[in-house]
Length: 292
Image (cartoon, rainbow, N blue to C red; front, side, top):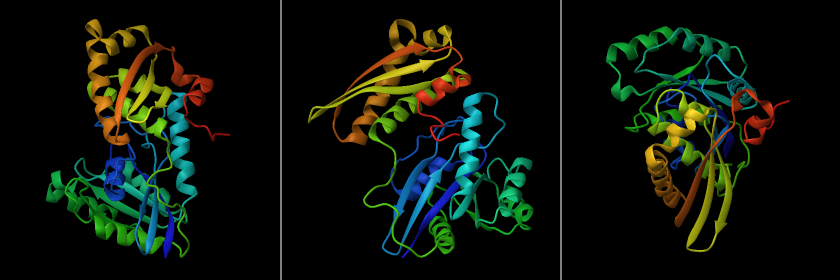
């Protein structure tokens, strides 16, 4: 069989995580309309009879403006150098940006096979799509227009990626992701915060699962929501705790779907000022653990 790794890269909010989730068939990465949703490398494993593709979903590529973002960019860069193929996802709805061209050109020269998925074609105009394909035409890359939401051309994309992979044994058995249940539960909470709150607040939030007790039919989960400023804490909690209760309720529902059990969720909001610029806290919260 064919088996190997594929780094999924691209600008922030290009649709990388949504595409990986649909290809794998399960939710392995959280999604939101906001940039910086994915903060770490997350594996999604697609296994069929004749092949296994290990997708490595990476943080979006953009200019780093704090230490955490710098760690995220290093994660994306490092991942793309350690795989059998690279899948660059470009938002066809927004149209081709100069940064997309620069990323594509750089990875064409990297010595690793490159495929380009033009995403969100279900909401793109034909003119935008044709222009993007034309502008990318000079690159040594397979270009596949796709829609994760509609399932358009996903089989063709998989076929292209499989052609890049070496012959070998499966890298994983009976799993769809390398992340722990604790990690996924924390990401579920963070996803609800990203979806509920606007502006800077959600980007300055980390979620730490400090309690996980499986009691058979019920799982007790305790989560600390860490933010950077006291006024952010007030916003996250809301009037008489209403905002925190709503986000926690949405998170609990998704946790129950994920675990297949009832969940008793307790959430607290804590302040760690400017934690995204404090390397020790960044590592403590689980980001950039493999950084030199």
